[in-house]
Amino acid sequence: MKRIIVCTFLVWMLSVSCASAELKVGDKATNFILKDSLGKEYTLISPEFQGRVVYINYADIGSKDMNKHVDDTLKKDPGIDRKNNYVGFGIANMKASIVPDFIIARVIKSKQEETGATILLDDNYIMLTRWGLENKVSNVIVLDKKRICRYIYKGKLPDEEVEKLISIVKEYQVK
Image (cartoon, rainbow, N blue to C red; front, side, top):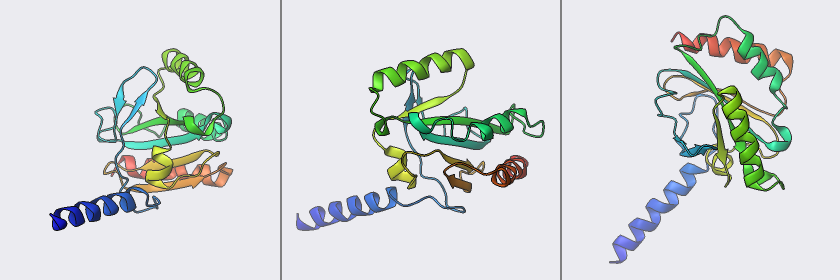
């Protein structure tokens, strides 16, 4: 009986320590389960993301536009194959805001319905903990088709970093 308790405790400690490791370039991203404002569940292996380079913008409501220039540049770049090899989405850090979750979710739902954007809701710091992201700023992550982190930046990207991010997306969408 003691062995079972000790083994269970060790497995739990290992899972906690692995889940809270900071995601770095070259690391395989740990999976997640998050819902959008419409209630649809997503993971890194969701069909919408399969076989594609994934760009993620993780931000709280106060910093949601911090890297809007990156989103705009990605949308305009003709070298990015959105149909087959690339997908971008946002994750809203709900817990960091003093605005009630139901109000944020309503605004996000409206934006999703209007634009077709995929915006997932993180109401319990799941991604901050799982990937070691920074709170109260925009975090930008690029994962290749095998879910290896190829780029991560915490904060407002300067122009030279935007160019670097786009070149990484283009490089890995053909690999």
